[in-house]
Image (cartoon, rainbow, N blue to C red):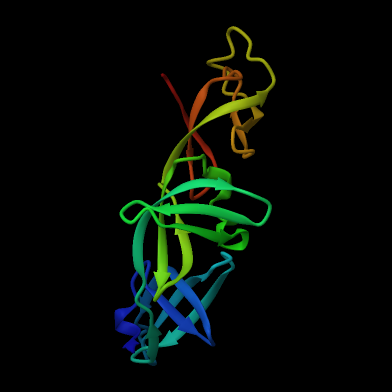
Amino acid sequence: MGSTSDIKNNVVMELNGTLWKVVEFLHVKPGKGNAFVRTKLKKIPGGQVIEQTFRSGEKIDDVKLTATEMTFLYSDESHYHIMDNETYEQIALDAELMTSVKDFLKENDLIKVLFRESTPVEVEVAAHVILEVTETEPGFRGDTATGGSKPAILETGLKVTVPLFLNIGDKVKVDTRSGEYLERVRA
């Protein structure tokens, strides 16, 4: 059990039987009246974002999660199969748990799985991933400076907007938080 003074980014709390992760917070001390904490919370799992305000000093149920580095092996229709890097134990995660990260995963990628006791509750990937372009319109000579863009499909099925000069087979860096193209990666 904690209080509003313990609220920081990435703190996980339980509200009405559901786990929420703090994405943003702001301690507000108005000139008149009591202080309060305005937060933006993300549901675990699922990713739904809500705004919640807490009175200063209000008690919150903070939750301790343990993080384990694991390797993504493969997926089938309803499960994603992962392996613990230390014990080599394999676990099948429900597809619902992977909805926010599935477009960034390739076989043998390292991921971080957060557990509440022995139950996996969230999966995190690196902030940036490198993926290959598998479908896009051909690039044209001289299009490097125009600043135009076109749609592309990457090897995981993720659709992004890329500059005109990129072609099939090029590798690109993608931000996993926003799903946006960052830069071309030279091999």
